[in-house]
Amino acid sequence: MTQEELDALLNSDEELNEIEETEESVEESEDTNKEDVIMPPPADDDNKVVAQLDEVTKESEEKASQVLEIITSISDDIENFKEKFEDILNFLERQKEIFEKLHNKFPHIKTFEKELEEVNKKTEEIKEMLESAEDAEMRVMSVLEIMQYQDIHRQKIERVINIMRALIKYMNKLFEGKISDEERVQSATYIPGDSKEVVSEEDIEELLKQFGV
Image 1: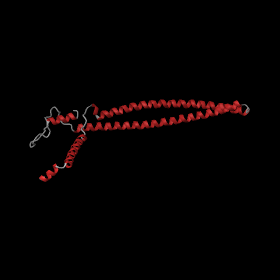
Image 2: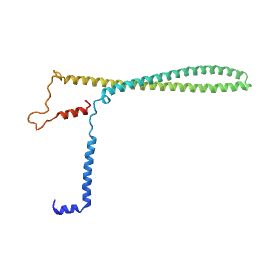
Image 3: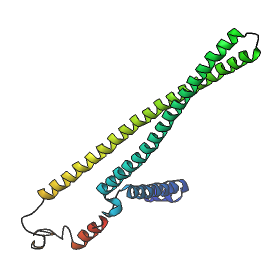
Image 4: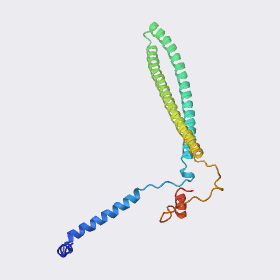
């Protein structure tokens, strides 16, 4: 940079601001990149994947059993309501026949006509209630079908757990040595020709701490 360029730079507040803004932008970008780095969670009880999945499937099964008990109870109540509605409907049908005969035989008696109208009205109301009960029963059946799908999803999670456990056992078997860890000599952290240790004891210990080991 020439003296003229340096003088022009010192005399220009705008250019200095641009430089400062650029430096701040770079620093913010570096901080953001640091924040974006995802470190592995420690291998403690709160982060064990299989244990968490086991807990999810267990709770899911328990809650599903509770829901099924409630649905079964509701279904039983609906069935009882339907039986009572049908009994009332049969009674009203018999009453209707009686008042129709009385009304036909004594058309001048207004009481028979009035009672017949009331019986017809109540009969229609009971029929509507019976239809509503049957509709509720169908909706309960739909919920039971949905619960079956939920149980299938739970079984899929259990299958994933079993596969994961099988893979873990396979990997442990694959990396299993012929001598015990107690008999194994300390592994080399560097080889001749390296300017320094590739992995120091401190690095290994820090890595183990990050994984909660």
